[in-house]
Length: 347
Ligand code: SF4
Ligand code: SF4
Image (cartoon, rainbow, N blue to C red; front, top):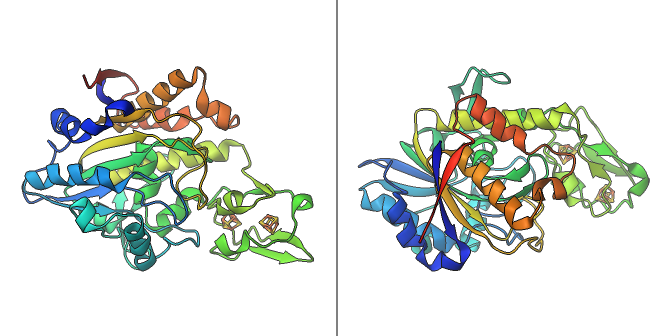
């Protein structure tokens, strides 16, 4: 049974005091390089974690005479975060500056997303995973994750931030590679909005209809998010469960040999992830922040809390085809943590 700490959103002004009380940086040691892994939000997206919340985390880490920095790895789709230069500029434009946050941004997998190291995990899908260098060479980690819906895993929380978020470009490809979208050409208007998001150039508009070259498709899913006509959809078969398991295996690689702590923000809960470059309206009132040294217990507790506030299975409600428990069950099975938890609310 793991402990999960909870700060309700109506007490968010106490965030810094709460962090100190729960020992959010107790795992950090003197002279550590401490990666604060966070998603800076795609340009145009409003759902990312407010940068003001980083400062108290960085301050606790610095207080232990360690060296904190904010980090994320580049994307495999053609957004504003596919290389380190544009990625850092997006972070800055969203307020993730040294001045605001008390530590600098270092893009984890380098200029072109290929700076990583193979980490042995010896699991069902991967023997080795490719983890971004700035994460791999850190001594300790703090994950700050926005808890919201996700088009492949039902929800995205700490495990998703650790797994998909810490993979290099090659790693991200290997997690997605079996997931080619289904295409309903009859709905296509030929607007070409999807084409620019497809980095391997698998999409082409000819005769005002989209064509998909499956031999080039990496399964990144960006066309699904970018098409206004819902031409693309995820084929709901065992492959989506496999992607969840692969993400969890990458999380195991990112955490291997590291001291770590995770903080999940359950606010601005949207259906799609923060890579979705359009402002979505949140589907729920802001709920709060949860934290734990056990990422499995933490994600389970967040999912449960959302469901109890919603009064039903919210994740099934937004993605009826996805079994969102796959990532939690598999993470528990491979020893990343426990789905059983004890909740401690900040009073
Ligand atoms: S975005 Fe959708 S409608 Fe537009 S070209 Fe692509 S598939 Fe067709
Ligand atoms: S066609 Fe494949 S590679 Fe291109 S955006 Fe869609 S899922 Fe990604």
